Image (cartoon, rainbow, N blue to C red; front, side, top):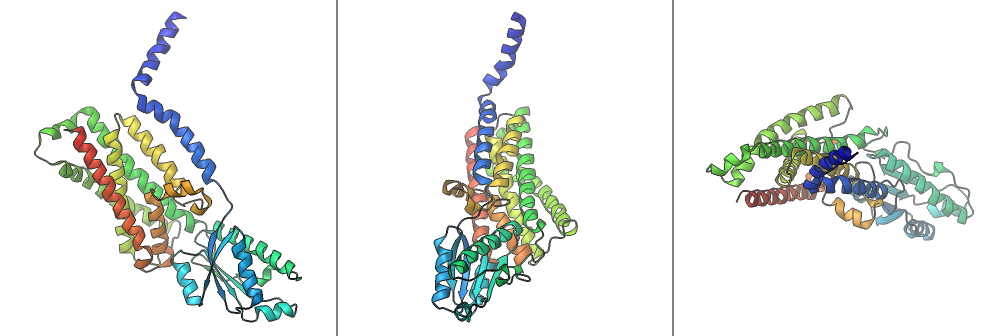
Length: 366
């Protein structure tokens, strides 16, 4: 029994000597539970929709007020279908409700008024949920008007924009691309540089005339070339196996993907400057990046469903901006102006992470 206690104590000592790994093992499950608990919400609240009211009469105004009064929709009234479709294409609204000019007269004559619902079907689950919520709101409204409501009031057969067949891969593949590139780039950079640090080969750079920024560039460029190959493989699979469309520019898609890879490589370098062992670097890269990238990027669950404090954290996720850019280029063929702010944020993140990594590198090797 005494020998067993000694052996157990011997196994505990390495854990005590590595408090970072211990804290990661304890805090990571806690973080995962909190993230999953707050993020995995399938209801939709305050979805932005555009309403084109061609009637502009008492009944149509009442319907718009009914939409705005609930917690499901945030209605924005527009003056033309061109304006509504522009908002839909720029991802500022998820649906368009068009109210016909004869809306009130048909209600007064106990006829079924014509309504048209146009949905952004890039995310099929969100589109069908919005449709169900809209049916519920209309059902309540027409019941209050003393009319029986039927879903045929919404002509949606050919109005699923950007994804008329409601293929789920159109929504998941852009997210998978972002997760895979983030993991590959950050993981291979952090682990390889940490391995060099453990082996002592990185210390040789101390006596070289190279500046820290030159060292970072020299370390990153080979991995960037590997990332370019990864981008080519992933995109070929997306277009051939999953039949993803490419409505926009392929060159622009590759350039944006390279920028995202640079951001991921910078994250990997930052992790390596803080990690003392390959195990820690791998754990942080896998658990610390994969889960937030999957849950907080809008890949699976709408960001608007999350608590406000968690929505604030999503702004720090490079994948959030990259996925939005991918959808604009691959599915919508949007003009560059529609996703230029996303590119700017991704570029800013890359520069900031690189600057922090450079600072940590200088501090470590002073």
